[in-house]
Amino acid sequence: MKKKVFAILLCGLPLLLNAQDAFDVLQLSQTELRGTSRFQAMAGAFGALGGDLSTLTQNPGGIGVYRNSDIGITMSLDFNSTKSGIDQMDQTKFNVNNIGYIGAIRLDSESVPNLNFGFSYNRLKSFNRHYIGGVGDIQNSMSNYVADEFVNMLDYTSDDLAWGDDYNPYFDGSAPWAAVSMFDMPTKTGGYVGIINENNDGLMQGLYGDGTTGNAFYEVDERGHADEYNIAFGGNFANKVYWGLDFGILDLDYRSYQSYVEDLTNAYIMANDEDLWDTPTINQGTTASWGLYNYLHSEGTGVNFKLGLIWRPTQSLRIGAAFHTPTFYDMRDTYYVGTDMVAYHNNELLYSAENGSNDGYDYSTTYTMSTPWHFLGSVAGVIGTSGIVSFDYEYVANQTMRIGDDRGGNYPDVTYNVKNYFKPSHIFRLGAEYRVSPNWSLRAGYSYKTTQVKNDVDNNDRNIITVGSNPSYQYDNSVQNITCGFGYRYKSFYADMAYIHNMRNTVYNAFSPVVDWGLYYPNVSADAKDHNNRVSLTLGMRF
Image 1: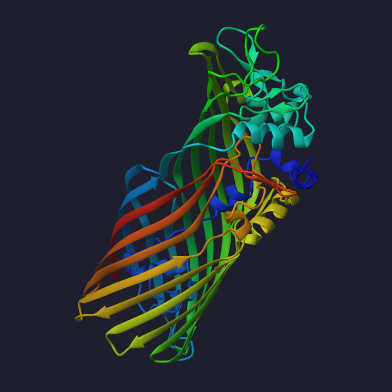
Image 2: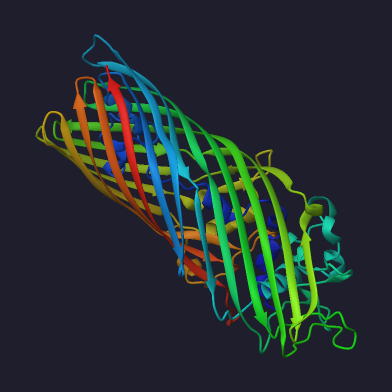
């Protein structure tokens, strides 16, 4: 039965014991357009310009452009709005995006005019996001997916799942948490019942079958941040080549609550009356409402290294390049999974049951993680003394992400999945600035980021392996930013403001489709669209 899927799942068996999967690493590796207001107003197209506190996180060669010292702080108000289906969730958040200092040391040399050093704090990503939605007339149930792909395909039996509500796979076995939590759920009136149950063939069976109809509801609530602390130094050669080196220390904190609920009519359920059924059987008038709830807290610290150059062949042309190593994280995850179900027959309550992993307590594990490496290429034109036009291209090697144990060894199953699910992302940034007067400047920009997943993933033509406690996964199809702003300079003081409109299209999948030997078992999938607005203010001094 589906031998190809079985082979793939066998490759992914160790992953069922890990806290994170390929899509979790993708989520934790994301960054967004943040930094100083001038940087944001030009959509981050600063790779060939430099001379801004944000360049420490982008092209550290920009530190060599400085002739004077610089100190500044950037604050913002974020107005986030996410819509999925007909439901829209709004949030307002205050963030400090950047605090930095650049020290310029002037040298009495024509070949090496100055050496500079700098320190900065940058918010790379705010994970704050909340969306809810529903899918009507579903064609499959997550319970069927868990029963088939998490149990039957891996040759688990009812004995492997019957650990009770204190099951912990790190000590008790290797069966996935989602399957264990859906089997032998304690009822409030005594006894046990399952969302997945053993049928007459000795296999696990879900709630959905011929004649079953239903709806699904989902909620994703994310919180947290990724912050970077930079230590950089650099300089220039003969005012032609500017160089910089940067060492980054990162702090990651991500919290996620996800719920998935199905309301099913004519469901295949177990009855608590021996006169009705002793195996899962359809019954007209039987309804079941059940849910899976996952909580995850990921936290870690990491390090990375960046190298950057800017070349100025003429007064009006600048060319930049930078390379970012992966960020190497030491991670700790805390997580919990719970399930519940209420079933009725002809509007009479059959049972109400609930279950939770690890006897109702959170469980923690540690591991290592590395994010993609990045390459940036940039070109900028300086138009007289009044205008700047800049273009950046960034290559994000998503296929190079890794997860490993806390001794640094990579998990081959995650490596396999990362290479098969993901492809490089490409980020294009265009920015412009026009100096209206010696004191005032106007700015605008646009950026576009392509999808991270391969076509067969986006088209639901591939089986997706996730961790055993949460079958859901999500990814961005595109991210766009439309930006504008202005700046004011008076002697050593400067103030910049920026407005950023962010558009993000995300695909949410409650569980994987099953595709094998010409057979297709659909999943439950929906879109979530962000239309976020940010107002940013930078205050600083150059001296």
